[in-house]
Length: 622
Image (tube, rainbow, N blue to C red):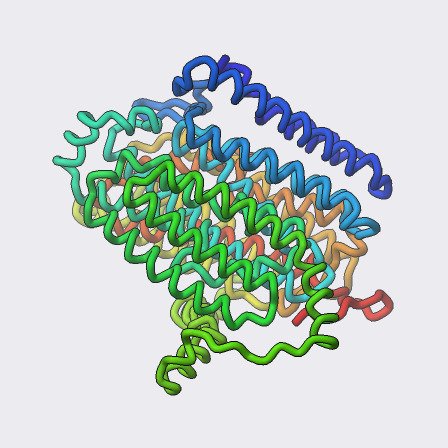
């Protein structure tokens, strides 16, 4: 029975591949393929769940195959099915089926009609991989797919300025969550001395022995898991992205940020609950943050002028309560709560356009005076303070900019000496010194050698900060991202005996994607008079094929699971020793920024309003 689980991923994958080759203007065929694919998936889900329930509801867990194995490192695909998976499967199947049916007419004559349904099926592949994942490595594959599909759907109206800008914002938060999951995988590898599955993680006796010896690492792993979950489910301090994600079409807002994607954080918390179940301090932490998030979201939702933002903050408040239920060990209550919240928010978002038009008509004919609320009993100064803070969303977005992104931008401006002409000279000197020290260890003392990986990783971090903040040269920004990967590979090489296979596995996708992307930039420079990063240029309008090729190159360079670099990222982290916290921090921060730098390049060159005046220009979003 377990082996037919492959169909849950195979069905949407086949539908996705078929949708890519369908004629762009044949809306009926595009929507029919998507609708039938998701419908077949729903019928198969009902059949499988019914069979599983009648057979005694025994958990299904089996190892598929190893993608890469070296020593005690084993990147393998593991499948797991239990009550948690069942709940997310049936909820996801029903809601995706309803939304795909709703979208067939709602998006009629939209320029990106095929693009929407292809992205919806792509998202559904990632969603099924996550809920059926039996270990963190398998989950990470689906995790990345969800992040990219979110970016594409938020920027669906890519000829406008604000959807593209908000897509980059959301992707930046998702990237932080990705790195949290990578760090959890890294520490788990040192914690267990092997790649562990969720089933093995539930072994109470073995887990107790490991936690008694490495209690601090256990707490840090739990915090990294929470960071990933909070980023995906819009919990504090990562809450500001959720209303910005509503820039996409209403159906994508419903399926992503009202029902399925936004609850994935709760899923990973439930899946890893046996690991942190006995960490009382961490459970208290989750409860406290859940309470604060719920209060913050409830107050903010009451002053929103946009109905989609109101629903977003209301959903955020409920997810805060779901996190509290999970931390309190109320798994069944949390699953019921997730299902109810998902169905309610999907319904609210799908009917929101009709509700808005109804309310507008109602205001003309029926005046309803302001009704007294509980806030009216508060002291006026306190009430007005809460109102203004909620109206500004408690300055959370501003805080992220002033404390995180703006310092990086100021630091990047001080690196203007790194021009396209001299950056390769600087890089050649660093790499020459690195190789000299790597193959001649006698030149430096053993104590000094321990600091070399950290120094190289820091130089790589400086390079990618410059790439992230570069405003002029596209070639310079792209080259610095590649240099960052090369310096990270060099830094890790000092930790172990130089293993060419591991390094080449990591760099294979980087080098190929980097070369393809560089040729795309050169080609665009030949076609257009000026290519820069000072604004959004919208070149996808005239160069759609070049846009697609460059986007694939961006995915490969940022470590998306289409190249061996995806496995290489996890592999090089396994070579970082558990006491090398600073090295792990620099490498993790590099992965956050290189992904953001790459998607920023893509967004600014190919997305946004058309730079040429003889094309129609979309009205600026507000």
